Length: 427
Image 1 (tube, rainbow, N blue to C red):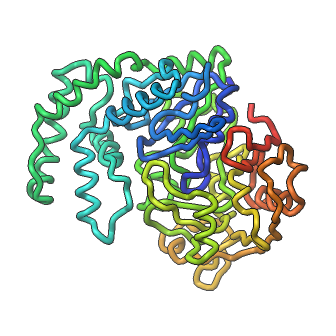
Image 2 (cartoon, rainbow, N blue to C red):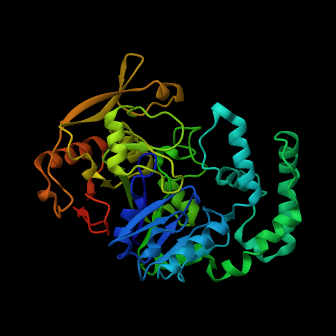
Image 3 (cartoon, one colour):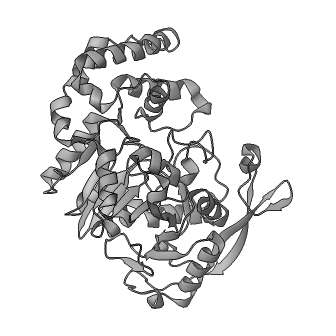
């Protein structure tokens, strides 16, 4: 049962799309198991760049079946628009499978998301305003709308009424907004039914049968470990579980079927949105990382906050995900620095701390303790083997591997599909 989980080991934006695409030719199914169109992947194929927001990266690999699992929240308009855009570029999207149990992002959840963030002011979380959080809240409150509800107008109407009973009270009395009409929402959602129907499937059954037949299934997480609702830097997190455990609940497979868990690490660190970030840089180095790395959110369009590599976070990701391997991306971005700082520990209230602090307060006050590693000036984008890298680049990779607690099995030396050094096969 070759089932692999591939996830972000930092705050997201680590280059998961490149890693998934690299494996795409060797796997039979690629599954998104959580999140929504608040996550984005950039995949470069030849001279073509693809920005994916909701679709699994495997959609670009012929012969691979892309799956949107039950743990994902789906904005139908975004999904259909993304499919249309790929079709126009000659990409076959007909194999896509969409779980009938996935929850739908309704227009009123987008409205609630945006007005809530504005209302919070300085206390805002930094959401994308795409209705992700309110949709997950509806799911937990058992007033959510699922894909399968589009095919029973009576049930759909009842569920929309139940959801709007409370939301209209909040919108009108707290936020001074107009009430949303039930009929209008139902009509809008029903208009998606026929367009989505060719993709809707019992994906739990499909995936488990595939594993029983020894098919290779890759579970692709959005965002990253430090954005996990349970294990991230709460409350500055996403509303789902990007960590490895989320693959089981978000796709409907048992944990005993997972054979490998691959964490994607950027050779430095970035995050988007508010929240603590111990190694964040506010100087020329931070701006250089942003510029050279092209650090702008695929989905949000926001500049990413940039900082040096944080080994404390990497060790934490190894622990909570049970990582078996790392894929280190964007090593090429670090070319040109004489010395490269790496955060090996934190200083909190005058004490050295080796592991991620349990207390939110402590993490907010954590100051990085750096170890300086020698840099390199050689162009590494053409390197095909680990031995092709400059000695200092090799030493940097080995140091990160030792600090992070899991072997680095692949290294990204450029954005292209072929600009990857594979040290150990993932399959």
